[in-house]
Each structure stands twice: as C-alpha cells, then as structure tokens.
Image 1 (cartoon, rainbow over the protein chains, first blue to last red):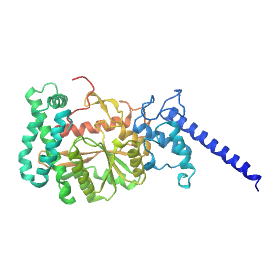
Image 2: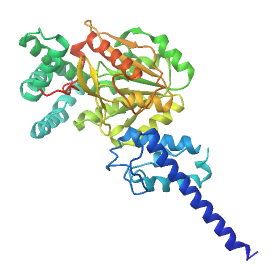
Image 3: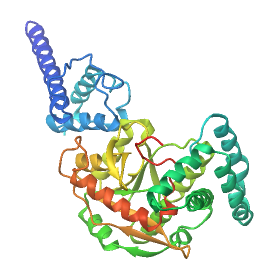
Image 4: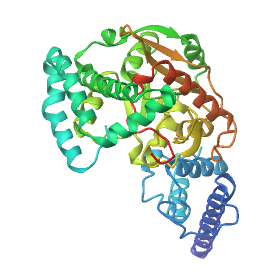
Amino acid sequence: MLDERPRAIAIMAATTMLSRDTVLETVERVLRNDLKFGQAPICEQTKLVGGDLHLDSLDLLMVVTGTEKALAIKLPGRRIDGSVMSTVGTFVDFVCAEMSTPAGKR
Amino acid sequence: MRGGGVFRVIENALFACLFIPLARHAPALSRRMQPIFAWCSWRLHAGRRRSLRRTARILLGPGAAPRDLDRFGRRVMTNIQSFIADVATIDRRSVESLAAGIDRYEGLDVFLEVLRRGKGMILASAHLGSFESAVAALRRVSDVPVQVAFARDRLAAFDRVRSRARRHLRIIESPVDDGVQSWLAMRDALEHGAVVAILADRVMPGQQGATLRFLGQPSRLPTGPVRLAALSGAPLVPTFVIPGRDGRSTLRFEPPIEVTSDARAIDDDHPGQRSLIDAMERAIRAAPEHWLVVEGPWMNAR
C-alpha cells in the first residue's frame, strides 16, 4: 500500500500537468482562431488586459466563452475579475482550479 | 451630460442640490424651471453648442440655417432636462402610470414571439425617449427579468436617481464599467431567457467600438450588442421609444436580427450590424430632437 502512494502522486501530478497544458493550448487556440491573433507571440505571460493584444471587455468575453465551449465547462462569471483575466497564465490557473471542482464540469 | 473640469463639478452640484430635489419634491416648479436650466446648459458650454450644431447639420441637412441649428440644439437640451426630471420621479410613480406614457405599440407581436422561444433577447436601442417607460409598458405583457447594460454617468446625482428608478421597475443593472464580469452576467441572463437592454449608439467604457457609417457619417459605434448576440445565440431586437408631438410615445419593436457571422470582424458589411444601424437611423429620423446625445459618435474633425 505504502509503495503505491508515490506512484499515485506521480500519476496525479502528470494528469494535472497535462490538464494545465491542454487548457493553455486551448486558450492560445481561442486567441489565435476566434480572436484572429494568428501567429502573434502568445505565452503564459501575455497580458490579456492592458497589453499588446489590446483586448476590450467583449474580447475577454470571447476568450471566456471560447474556452468554455472548447473544454465543455461552465465558468462562474461572478468570480472572473480583473486579476483572473490579467494574463493568459492567470486565466489558465483559474480554469484549472475550476475544473478541479465538481461545479466546474458541465 | 458630459462636460469638462470645473463646469462639471458645478453642474454636478447644481443637479444634486437643486435640479433633482426640485424634480422630486416640486415637479410643477421644476417643469417651469427646465427652460432656464436648458438655456444655461446651452449658453455656458461652448463644446456642447458645437457638438449639437454639428449633429443638427447632419440630421437637418446642409441647407439648414444657423438659426435652425441653434433651435435644434436648445430643444435637445430641453428634452434632456425633461428626461432627467422624469427619471428623478420614476420611483414615486406607479408602474401603471409610467406605462401610460406609451400609448402606441408597433411590432409587439415580434417581442412576444421572440419571448416565447425562451432563448433570451437583446433589446438594442438608442438614446431616444424613456427606457423606463418602455420597461413599465413591457411589464403589462410579461414578467420576464430585464437586465440593462449601462455606463455610470459622470453626474453621480443622476446615477443615484436612475438606479432608484430601475430598482422600482425590477430592472437588474449591469455596469459595463466593471468589465467582463458584467458581460458574463448578461450572457448568463440570456441563457436563462432574460431580456437584456443595451444602447447601440454610443461606445461605452471598456469597449473599442468600430468605425461604421451612421446617418451618412463615418462614426465610432459600439459593437457590443451584435457581439453579445453572436456569443450568446440570443436574437437582437431593435427597440425604440419614439416620442410624438402630442407628448405620448410609440414603443417600436423591429424584426429580430439573428447574428450568426463572425463576432469580431464587424464592419459596414456585417449584416447584423447594418440592420441594427438601419433601424436606429429610422428611429432617430422619426424624432431627431429627442435623440438625447450631446456628443455625437462622428469621426471627422469638427
């Protein structure tokens, strides 16, 4: 039993990493395809608010709805504030945290 | 209701300490004072005069005499004063008496049919007539939740009475100044079949808008209504309160616009945006002096 625990933790960690990568890829895809940023450099540090992308609040709504649709999840709008939408990374963290709760899954 | 610096501070104080208390507690006196307030607003703010003359030129045509332009501007200012005084007293009146301000309906069957579909609906409008009277009139036929997208006004005193009026009519406020949270709240409300009301003739804070042809002029207009319709799947219903010469108003619902095309690339060729602009132009031309916009959305230099 004790021997199994490190393996289980390793699997959990790998799953979490994979999920985060998937979410990051999804958000990047939404920005490139839905918001037409094409080949623009987008990474975790890319600012969603006040950055080079010049996103307005409706663009941010597109980021949220596009991500929801792609991942088949529903995000709680009341908790999505300026700090969540600060950068691609902070939004990805928020989505991952929401996906880990039962309410986050559709 | 926009102005700069010291003028705005004085105007805010006047509204908070004189105009709004008068409208609420001595409406008859307030009505008699309105021409004086309107005259002051017209005379004391050169920027407003310039903006209103420009709008008058666009709406009345190049042949309009300077005297006609000034008359138009003063009437718009008077109508703005009446509108503010009206909003200040809404919470003191019954829903029935507010609804009585509208005695003609056009396309009500359109509204009811879209409502029956249960997909929510976006009522896109312009700064024409009393939105609150329209909601009161809608309350006669439906108890559907109504949410309004709005930008907080620079006149804090006006903002307070407007919020009070909306609470009275059970209208849920979504301040777009709060950013994406408000848009998500509207999207969620639409998913639950609610009505979301939104103005389509002025770019609100947090939006970029798009350069579009409006009333024959290159203008900066909001794309929020069309984009929200595209993202939520809710139809857009252009809706206007058109004041008549007899003091009564018509509540007009235009045919619904289903927005299926791209939600970001909005230009003059976007069919949903074009249909909305056409509907706004018809409504504004029907009652140009009641289009309560001091600074028009025009792009070109003055």
